Image 1 (cartoon, rainbow, N blue to C red):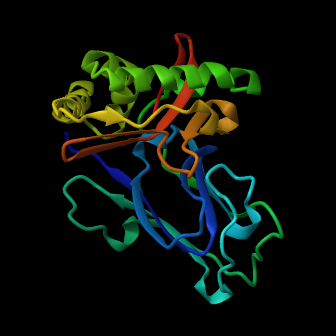
Image 2 (image 1 turned 30 degrees about the vertical axis):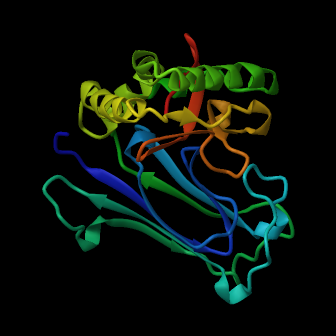
Length: 268
């Protein structure tokens, strides 16, 4: 990868359901109230122009209807916390300077009490970053409707079938748009990302015991965001919808799709 600026989202949370979005796109979700410390590159989600970082939180026991967020044991108030910050790491930096901590938020339950049910918005902050990586294909997608569920799951099933059949070129074709855009976001090339995926898949496909977990579309949840232009596919436990194992390798594949001109396409 060439030199580039990283915009890194950091999330610390415990005892809460947490959903973080950027420009309306869901970029982080914890549905069971577990203790988490997560860092994630936001570059593939950044928009040229206005970027609004938002967060919604709630109690796990009040989220039975959330995909992957079945109600859990009630956490003590002292065990519940949520902090997030956005950190910039510019080319050549090994560690961010103070001015590179672009934004920090810490939840105060006295100022933003938890709702009795559902999620409450506790953060909305506009980031002024200017032009970043250009326009993404999903920004021009047709929004998802409930009538699209079967078509989305059919595409996920096709990816599962290609993985189960060890169809390396077929799998790579499904990820062409994602590889192109993520490479642009991270200062690399589509060939580099495709090469990394090819190498990993070739290694697990070479295992005699390579198997995909059975495909059960009725257990999968679809979570639209960005006004329905993005659809995240989640497993019954909120995890990856496609899982495979072989030898010492394990695949847990998260998928976010958009309805582009060519049909439902993996974009992240």
